[in-house]
Image (tube, rainbow, N blue to C red; front, top):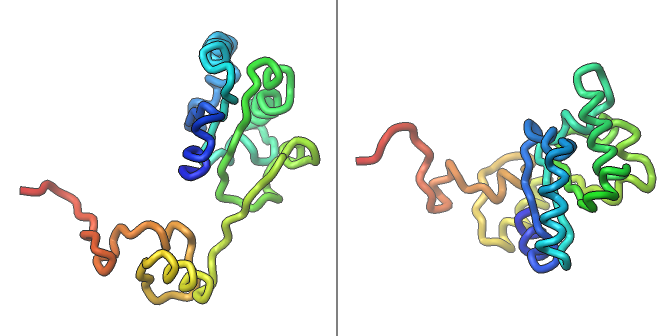
Length: 164
């Protein structure tokens, strides 16, 4: 996502909204904010990133019915047409667990699945990036790229407390 935001910096204005504040997007008082963004940035598209958006995208139940409907309206309804935004949502669940209305043809433009890499795949990536890897069976991208707690990568192990 960081790379995508960087690549789109000349054509998009990016906003990060935590799922807990998603209600701000569909709040009528925010329409003024979005319209002002469009006026101030007429050549830019508005891009909203919602990380860990399972509560907004999972199958509709009593606890999330309104959130899913609001997201659908924002992305594909009258509200979305009015404020003209593009959404990127990240989730940590299989695509099959998302509400069918979210994933139907014409609504979900694209998705990327970042599965765990086999040891061989991870080693190929690590070698190309000069990243040492601990010995294990498979790896997430976070385990490869996040050197925290890997002293062999030249980073100190995280510790609690204060430095003198």
